[in-house]
Length: 228
View 1 (cartoon, one colour):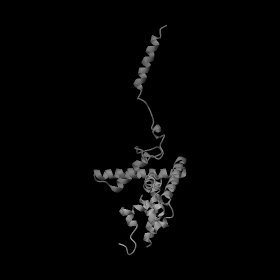
View 2 (cartoon, rainbow, N blue to C red):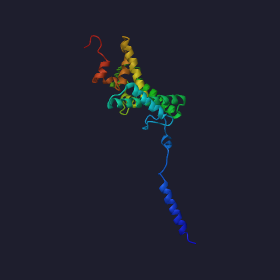
View 3 (cartoon, helix red, strand yellow):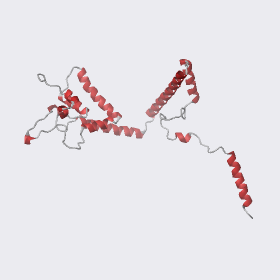
View 4 (cartoon, rainbow, N blue to C red):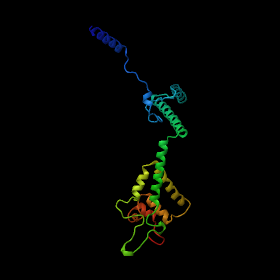
C-alpha cells in the first residue's frame, strides 16, 4: 500500500496549521531573566511595576503643571520618566540593602583592601621618616632621594598610585578625604609641617624633588622667612 495519500494529507494539514499560525510566540519573561535593578532598561515598565500607576502619575503631573505647548508637554513627560526611574533606583537600593549580593560585597571588600594598600604606599615614605626630608648624606658622594627608590619601574611611583586610585570610586573618596584633612589644618590657621607637605606632594602624584621646577610642588614649599 502506497504512503502517498498519507503524505498528501500530512502536507495539507501542515499548510493549514501554518496559515492559522501568527508566528513564533514569546513572552517578555526571557528578556528580564538577567534583570538586576533595571536602571539601564529601555522599557518604561518592568516586571512588578504598575502601568496604571505610571499613567496616573503622568495625569497628575499634567494637571499640576498644566502644559500649554509642546515644549511643556515634553518637559512633563521627562519629569514623569525621571521620577519613575528615581523610584526604581530607591527600590533597587532598598532591595540591595535587604539582600546584598555576595559577589558585589566581595568586590567592594577587595576594592577597599586595594585602596587601603595603595594609600599606605602613597603617603608612606619608604626611604625614612618624612619629618627629616630632605636627608642629605654625603657618604660616598651620593645624595639619597627620599620616597624615590631610583628604579625606573618603581611600584611606589606616586603618579602610578594616584592614577590607580582615581579610576576607582573608593579611591577617589580616599583621595578627597586626605585633601580634606590637609585643608582642615589650613582652615584652623595651622601651617603644614614637613610630613603634611610630603603628603600633599604625593597626593599630586609628584615627588618632593619636583619642587625644582613644578609650580604646584613649589607652592607647597614656601620660602623660609628672610628668603626671597
